[in-house]
Image (cartoon, rainbow, N blue to C red; front, side):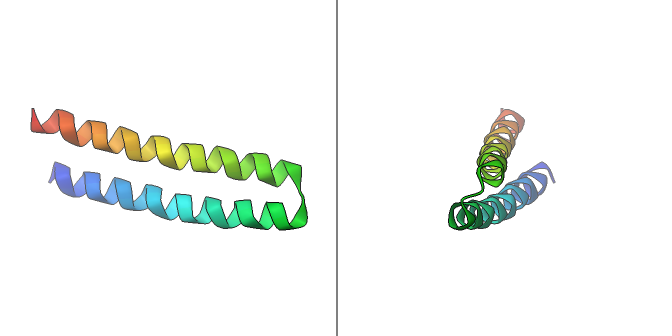
Length: 62
C-alpha cells in the first residue's frame, strides 16, 4: 500500500513538473520575469516532491 502511495506521489510530482515546464516556456516566450520565477519555483517544488517520495519509499523498505 505504501509503494502505491509512493507511485501516486511521484506521478503527481511529474504532472506538476510538466505543468511548470509549460509555464516556463510561456514565460520565456512572453518575457515575463515574474512568471519565469514562478515556473522555476514550481519546477523546484516538483523535484523536491519526487525526492521526498523516493526517500519515504526507501525508508518504508527498511
